[in-house]
Length: 299
Image (cartoon, rainbow, N blue to C red; front, side):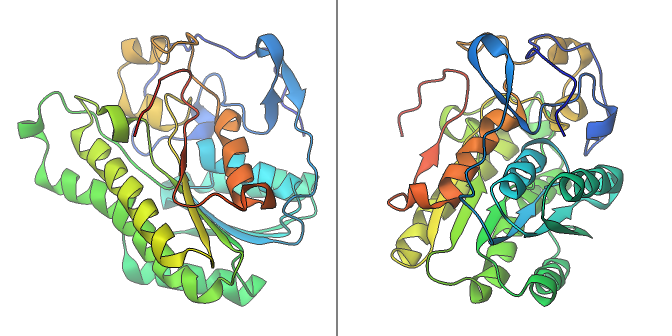
């Protein structure tokens, strides 16, 4: 189901939302399941059945990058998909389920939970296994961020919450998924450009993203030859986290400092996840891909 959009926007009207951010309230909506072609014009995504018959979990799959990943996985043949989402994002999750099942031969399970709660994560992974039997692909994408002008002003509770969501939740999900993954399975983690260049106003968030890089590299060495573990480090991408984190003025300028002069769309990241999850990435493990609009990353 193609969106009624024919050009990638570089301008976003000033807007703000409460955390965690809702995709259906964004203006314009992110581009989730068309591919961006020459001169910013949209082209239909051309699937090739790379993930046919696979079963997948996508955390934070209700909106933004996770939603795009879920759409493209379904187009590539994933036929059993579980989306973990924040309970306040239920409408986005149900919209995603409806659109995927209405346009693909893929059954979608949705699970609202606190990704930082170990028992909830354990039950959610088991719910996927009870329905679909196995986990061929795990995408650890759920995350949160909060702007702070000064590190000394970040509440301790916020630091703990950001780490619970961004890195501990990822570890919990991976821990409980691994017994249900077999040789040839794939894990793809979402880190960030901020893990490499830092972010003065996102110190705790950037720190979690650095931890994700280390987690990806370390786990990949432990599982080498069995399960591939890679990551994607997006730059500025138009997702619900943006109006939920920044001021109206900052939203209007979002992404314009990149070499390409614009923010990216979720689908422009999602193709990296398809690659890392599929057979074309058979010799990739412990690696990070960088869809960031032109930032040169050495590391």
